[in-house]
Amino acid sequence: QSGTFSRTVMAAINWRASRMLKSTVCGNRGFVGLLSSTFRHQSTAAKPDTKPKKTKFGPLADDDRIFTNLYGRHDWTLKGAKSRGDWYKTKEILLKGVDWILKEVSTSGLRGRGGAGFPAGMKWGFMNKPSDGRPKYLVVNADEGEPGTCKDREIMRHDPHKLVEGCLVAGFSMGARAAYIYIRGEFYNEASNMQVAINEAYRDGLIGKDACGTGYDFDIFMHRGAGAYICGEETALIESMEGKQGKPRLKPPFPADIGLFGCPTTVANVETVAVAPAICRRGGEWFASFGRERNSGTKLFCISGNVNTPCTVEEEMSIPLRELIERHAGGVKGGWDNLQGVIPGGSSVPILPKSICDDIMMDFDALVGVQSGLGTAAVIVIDKQFDVIKAIARLSEFYKHESCGQCTPCREGCNWLNKIMWRFVDGNAQPGEIDMIYELSKQIEGHTICALGDAAAWPVQGLVRHFRPELEERMKLYKDMAGEVGQAAV
View 1 (spheres, rainbow, N blue to C red):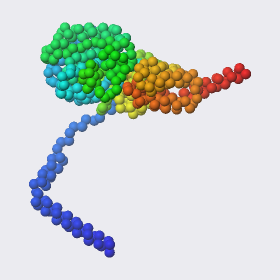
View 2 (cartoon, helix red, strand yellow; view 1 turned 180 degrees about the horizontal axis):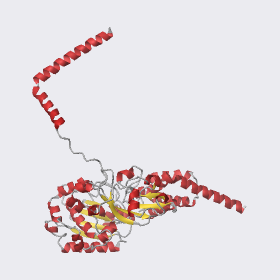
View 3 (tube, rainbow, N blue to C red; view 1 turned 120 degrees about the vertical axis):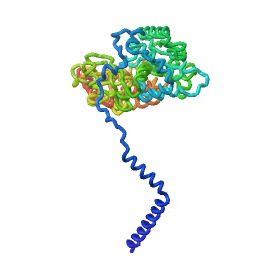
View 4 (tube, rainbow, N blue to C red; view 1 turned 60 degrees about the horizontal axis):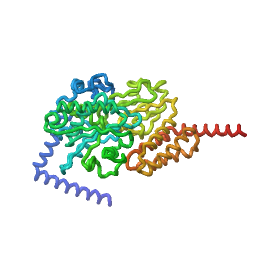
């Protein structure tokens, strides 16, 4: 009975629904016609062209290189720079307006080349708020102090006009009154060449009053640092430029609100700024055609360590690490099988073992996926003959020395990491201390004003994560040797 009742109810519901549908259709033929025509249009409309996803990255063709005098083989002065295409139609780029420049930079997918990888178009756009009367500034971070990193110095000494022109284009997109290039104190030749390039640009009317004949006034100043690694952090850099101790500021307020001299400021890396004119000339789509999505463009890679031919080279983003090393650095000493590990992005990112290096791609997302990072793209290669524990201990010593001491976790923690790591080098430790030093690094990471604490913690974390057997073997060897010495003494 219940089954019959259910069927009766369902039949009544279906009949009622059909009646409602008929009345709706009869009373609203125009709506139904619109729907049917829309469906027909969608079915017959041509499907948009979907380009197949790129699967092979690198090598980069010479015609696509932005830094055409990276090795100093040509004239680096204004005359030589113009012969290679610099300062070509710069006036036209500026006259297209702020919105057009920011659109091209955003389309290109350019991300910061100083380590953080923040989208450049978005960052530069933060400056375009209604003016409150304060001048705006562009600060170029040329304080390249990261161990293993040697890309910005090549731009400044061999292709300085790339940076000068980049300052003008980037500064114009922000409405900046001036650019300050904060250069590392040790870079004497680089600072000299940059100053010559700036003077040439002033004499040629490219910068200064009525820059490039556009009616836009823009000055560029050089400021030499005194060698402190911490001044590579943007707010510490600003403090140093203001004549104070180079110690990071609490954020917020961010530099885009209150930066240099209390005015809106954007701090950008040398390479990030230097590629802006090429992006505007050749188009954001061109730059975005290199590398994977969200990791687009060309990139300067610094390859050092146990390779046959250390070098700095411009390559396509997302190129496989193995191809990068073997094509440009002559391969690992003793062959690829002799590889022990690679620090892929400068001293502050975690080391990767050979098993991961075999097929990893060199871009932001791929390296984050294996608990490391692209950083400054400074590739440090370590072969099996080198003591990897000692290499990480040396980095711990560096960060202990460069900590500004403002934050307790960093000030105290870096000293503890350094002491423990050098005991690990000798093997004078207990296996339980491996987990202890990892926990210590976690108490430093994320608990400081700036990222120096993270930079000190990550190399140790990478060592523990991938080279624990080597640490345990070193401790066992030390214990066995101590036992033998004790028996001999008896």
